[in-house]
Image (tube, rainbow, N blue to C red; front, side, top):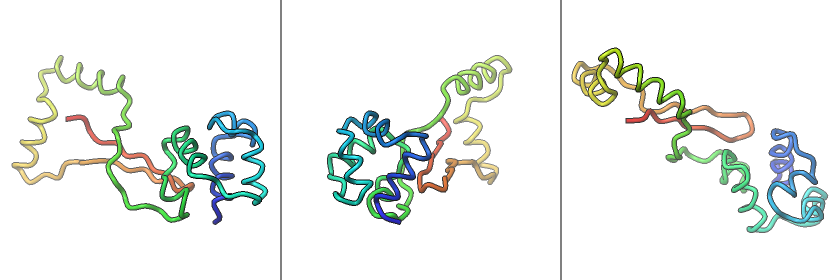
Length: 131
């Protein structure tokens, strides 16, 4: 898959026209037209702006078309859910997460370290439990 096709996939996955994509990443609309038409290859600045506007897009995939090896990312966790979990644990007298993990490890129980969701467009999300 060419870089042109990968950019088109990013646009399609986000329901954006060429013009809307250009506006979102902050480039001239003609830049998009030139890249999509195959007249120009995207510049480093163009790619940086794309990756900043779409943080879930894997940079390695966008540039090379290959899936990158997993590397730590920032937590993608709904803070409202965490707050609810923490407050309900406090209210019920349940052990905190670290204490629970230490007890489970001592008993030889495996603990979820992270959850990774892979999407067909080559992007992924990684969620790491709050400690």
